[in-house]
Length: 143
Image 1 (cartoon, rainbow, N blue to C red):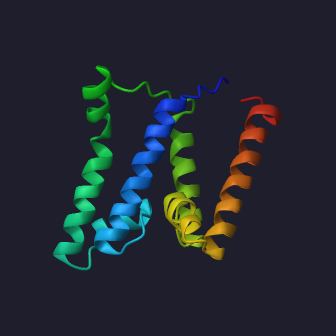
Image 2: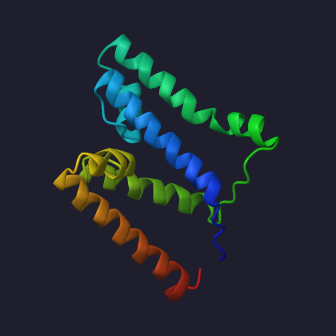
């Protein structure tokens, strides 16, 4: 399985995620944790709380349309696994988010920027687990 690295698109995406995290902290005093934002959208504490979450999620979902406007084509998306494997992966990630009290955006982007010890441990755990999983799937299981 070949991995295609796209440095400019990756840099642009990273800058946009960082900008969104800074703006959310500056305007709402909230950490940009994507799963927490989604959870608060599904079960909001107030209508004003729901509104900013809806706007942010709408921005995430419409991102490919912005890419289409800039690049003239939709981004190429290749999913090298079956739908059942994606569902299983999603459930595993959901459990990890629950037990880890946050996701990669909350811990990895915002928590590391705040030098949170809990986020440092969580991010190291994410990265080590990801590296081990990729190694096992590609080199041990032959995927």
